[in-house]
Every structure is written in C-alpha cells, then in structure tokens.
Length: 397
Ligand SMILES: CCCCC/C=C/CC(=O)SCCNC(=O)CCNC(=O)[C@H](O)C(C)(C)COP(=O)(O)OP(=O)(O)OC[C@H]1O[C@@H](n2cnc3c(N)ncnc32)[C@H](O)[C@@H]1OP(=O)(O)O
Image (cartoon, rainbow, N blue to C red; front, top):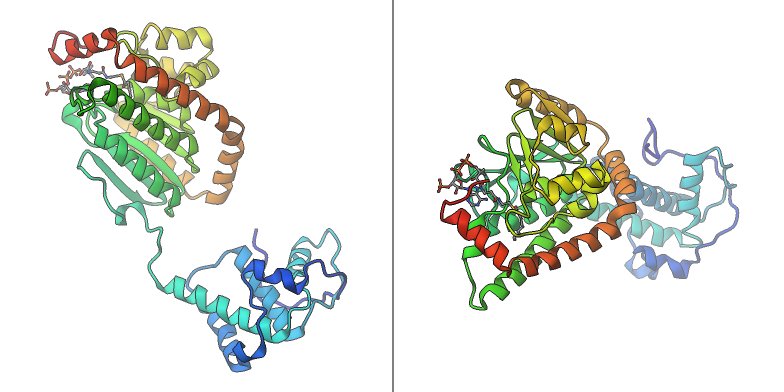
C-alpha cells in the first residue's frame, strides 16, 4: 500500500484542525529542528527542496514521505487546521496524524526541517547503496563459498566439490557473513546450495584435527561457540530461506534444514544424520524441529540410529517441500524461485516474522543446549575414535 496512491507525494487535503497531542518540545525527538529564525532556510531554499524531492532517484518509503508531507503542510499552512478524517479515510487520517503531530512548530522551523530532510535524502540517493547486492560485496575468504546475487535471489553456494562440500571452520564463518549480508541486501529470497554431485557432507572431520594451544578442551569450546553463532544466523534470518539440495546431504547440512522455509531436493538426494556413529549428538535445533516436523519416532530413527532417508521419504516426512527429477531439477527449481522472488519482499519478510517469532526464543534455547552438549561430546572417546576411524580410511558412512 502507498500513502499517496496514484498521486503526487505532497497532494493537497481538505482536512481541518482538531486537538494536538505532540507539543513542540517533543518535536526534537523526531529529529526535527525547533531553533530560532537566525538558522532557518529561506523560502527560495524551501522551493528548491520541493523541486528536488521530485527528482529523488529512490522512493524514500512511506514513513519518510509522511514526514515530508507533514513538514510541507506545516511550512505552507502552519499548524494542522482541518478536522480529523473518519476511520474509513485511512490514508487521509494517517497524513492528518503526521501533520497534527507537529503541533505548533513554526512555519519557518518546518521549512528548515523540510530542507534538511530533502538534503539528507538527496545525499544518500547519490552515494552508493550501503546494501549493495551480495555479488558486489566483499566475497568470502576462500573459494569454498561463492555468493552471487541475481534476479532478486542471493545464492550462497558451497563450492568444495572434491570434498563433497564438507564444511571447514572458515566456511562456517563465511556462511555467517554471507547470511548477515544477505539479510540486508536488496534480494527477496536467499538460497543455499552446493556445487558438484553432493549438497554437503556435513562438518569437515579434519576440523577436529587442528588442535589449538589450549588442546582438545579449547578446540571443543571454540567449535561450540562457532556452531552456536552459525545456527543462530539461520534462526534469525529474516527473509525466505530456501535450500536447493542438489545431491546427498549429511550431518549439519541436514539438521539445519528444519530452520529453512522451503527445501527443494533432487530425487538423487539423501538425508543422513549419523550422529551416534560419530559419537556425537544432534545440532542445528534438530532435537526440537525434527520431532515437530516428522513426529518423535521418525525423528528418533534419524537422530539416534542414523537412518538415511531418500528424497521421497524426506518429503513424505515433511523435511523436504518437493522432490524433482534430477534431469530437470535445476531448471524447474530456479524458474520457480525466480517467480517467487518477484513477490512483494516486505510481505514475505513480515509473514516469515510472524511464523518464526513464536518459536525464536525456544529455538535459541535449544541451540544453546545442543551446542553445550556437543562441546562435551567432542571431548569423548566415542567421538575421537569415530573421527580417527574416518580419517584413517577405515570407516565411510
Ligand atoms: C564448528 C564446528 C561445528 C560442528 C558441527 C557438527 C556437525 C556434525 C556433522 O556434520 S556429522 C557429519 C560429518 N560427516 C561425515 O561423517 C561424512 C564423512 N564422509 C563420508 O562418509 C564419505 O566421504 C561420503 C559418504 C560423504 C562420500 O563418500 P564417497 O565415497 O562418495 O566419497 P569420498 O569418501 O571418496 O570423499 C571424497 C573426498 O571428500 C572427503 N570428505 C568427504 N566428506 C568429508 C567430511 N565430512 N570431512 C572431511 N572430508 C570429507 C573424503 O575424505 C575424500 O577426500 P580425499 O579425496 O582427499 O580422500
């Protein structure tokens, strides 16, 4: 909805005065000037600003337009002097409220505030946007993650196909940074996917071999902190988040799927959480999301016994939204995502917010608990032996 549908931003109104509930003393709280005439803009400055506002390259948004409207009315007509519109005239009532909120601010001060606001808007529309598309922003530290932005979609691609896209410590950090940037960029949708035949083989088991000076205990402490930050980013991510699962998925790449909004999978994908085999325990909030999504016994079969699901099974159990034939997977999924990315982004954000907000506190608590349990597990013999077996090529999942 726009506050100025089909008309000029500063369109006239037939409103008349009623009560004022914002005194001039409260006006500075809105960042408005109430100073003396010596500092005030001339009528010519004001006229220039009125012309300049029509040349702004970017729509400043309804809140700013409302402020401009109110200041314009105050500067040209003085304090609000028309009656409050009825409830049905919603747009006029919003405009009236904004004007009326300026109370008895003088015409001169309103003029100055208008000029200041337009000059700030002009300056920011001329400087490069601080939230440039992800492709133009700083790229991740290594080539193992590739971030691009196109057609309203920011894509975060795991790019370590020779290692089945196993996640190194640096990749966790880069994904955190990419999600933080994507949450602020201009894209409507964010996608996580993989390069090559795998989606992701989970945590890179060699992460556990780089022992810091503080030894195993310090390694477990810092890994738990990183894991917690990583999962928090998925919990808090504000836009639609879609997993394009291009092949088998293992470990943490499966568990965090419960925090995505939509999961599309090729029929070649499988979903495997071999935590007991590795002497570990669930993460990514899966101890909470999986029982909710698929019921407690199906979740237990995956999380306790490491049952590997086919794409069709994962879809039947609600972990996957839809499965596509491998031959047409990329074409079908990206065509669909491009269409979705044209939907009004604010509506999608707000809808996600309503859905997620109810769960956020719980999810953060689950993440904290899972990370702290894993910190202990990583120091256990069960875990150390399982990782040693994989690294010595004795065991493959
Ligand atoms: C900050 C820390 C947070 C920690 C969060 C905790 C998360 C928990 C998990 O994610 S648990 C899951 C861990 N993942 C695994 O246990 C998978 C181990 N990998 C395998 O079992 C197999 O490699 C496979 C089944 C994924 C694929 O088998 P395939 O035969 O098709 O291929 P290769 O085994 O030859 O693999 C190709 C090369 O990739 C290396 N590799 C694969 N996965 C991992 C991995 N997870 N960690 C490290 N390296 C991995 C594999 O070693 C081969 O390398 P090489 O060519 O140099 O031999």
